[in-house]
Image (cartoon, rainbow, N blue to C red; front, side):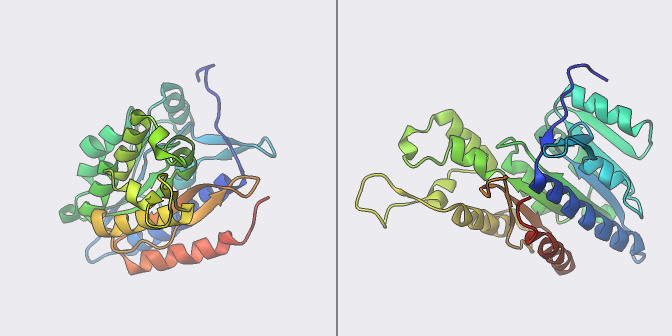
Length: 278
């Protein structure tokens, strides 16, 4: 394993996120494994898989990441596709997993790998279905991936909506001061420039600078976009994930085509949302 590897340190709410995803993966695999008429081939996909384990900020303990959690789900998924752009993290992941014929590990940009190599394997007509974890570190995910997942009608997704990165680099009080490369990052994640109308209002101020909307307003606009543009039938309100000071760092979105999937996630969200910041 590379000496350059530094494990990601995660806070309390990231640990909660891992528990949420693990709970849903177990329910998802249980339901799809029992499907017999027709039988379905269900696949787990992790686009930002990381090194396989994380270091907790508070306890400084190692905890398994989402790929290892998924690999321990029973009944098992039929296949696992794990992606990371960092070679040292891919090396760590491969060392932890070993040689398993049902696990495929990719090194590179997930935006390209998902669209070109992985998503084509999850075709509706071939009775394939997938649970896809889209957990970017910031605005590193292209809308084309989200859109394709919605249009294929074969995916349930968990999506990290990185509002902290947005606020830090794009959604400033005065949007005229934001550099064009940062705006382009936002365009890529959102899919176009319509994020501006979601993030700012000009009809409520007498000044030239538009009024910035709340994090909840922006997340709600994206939730509608997941339904109306990407084509996911069921998109419940996302769960806000906070840092140790209580500030929202990102929203955890879930999107699916199935009512049952939404109901399961809502129960899981309810289970964890009142635990507070620890």
